[in-house]
Amino acid sequence: MRPVSLTSALAVTFLVGTGAIAASFFTPVLAQALPTKPPTSEQRADAYYTEDQARRGRFLFDRNCAVCHSMDPALSTPQDLTSARPRTFAGKYLERKVFPGDTKWLFPSVFYLFKKAETMPPWDTESISPQVRADIIAYILQGNGYPAGARQLTSDSLAMKTMMLHESGFVKIFNERDLSQMKFLFGYNCRAAPEGCATSDPGTVFRVDNRVLVCRCQSHGLWYTEGKYLNFTLRFEYRFTRPSDWEGDDELYSASTGYWVFMNDYRVWPRAFEIEGNNRDVLEIFGAVRAGSSTYDMEAKRRAIKPLGEWNAVEIVSKDGQVTSSLNGVVLSTFSHDRTEAGHIAFQSQGGEVSWRNIRIRVE
Image (cartoon, rainbow, N blue to C red; front, side, top):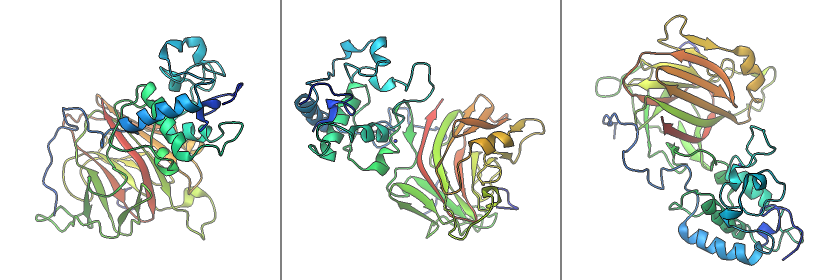
């Protein structure tokens, strides 16, 4: 924000829809955005289950689902992928869309797969436990090529909503447990200590609540990534806390945040490019952008944004000197730049409670 405003039967339908589920201060970091070695299972955004759990899920699938379904990838054909009753849940099953030609995924996250599973088995949906469903889904994820990790899949809906499918190569930059992967700066236009007055203690400004990063934002400052990035795709969801006494147009709500890219100076208002985060002009470009090098579509923003208090999905893509920002799948802004040096990404604290979840990034 500007300084001035600061997811045993016969004819069953689908696994999960047919008999399937029967049963001290910052030291400058390295400039490289991500490690050259493969990300660990703690970092990967698609490591949702353990190997042991998938083995357990295979037994449970054979016991509860195999009467109607298979996990043989050889049965997966283009015709199967658009049929209402697929023969197999392996191979590219999770890549099915709702209808042929549709652009929406049937299962954008594990949450939607699990919710479908809760309707099964149709003869008795309470005959198996939620954890049995989770174990079977772990086996299906394995059969669709999703890698195993260090943590077991559970029936926690909040966790499953952040387990996105169809996002190969993304890693999490918020671990959903604590603030250990984040760096902080607070103070009025201050540089980092010891050169300036900025502090690095988040105090009560930031907390983690049910896998969500919550900012009370009563103090002006920011949190920023450990790594540095130049060409990347950043995705996350944000939600403002709707005040109990709020009334009127949502655009009038003035609490805000903002997203800084290519940050290399450690102060609260860095010399970087800011992508606005307030409700009025979310994703508009501000700061150090040459005249004529940016665009913003306010009418598209009004069509795309969800009501105050609901989750909105943001995607920021930086590629070869062009940055494009989208809200709920709709492009709102673009800008051009001549930066050649990777920089941190920062999320601003300013003026009113905001929450973020599912923060992940892929280096392009």
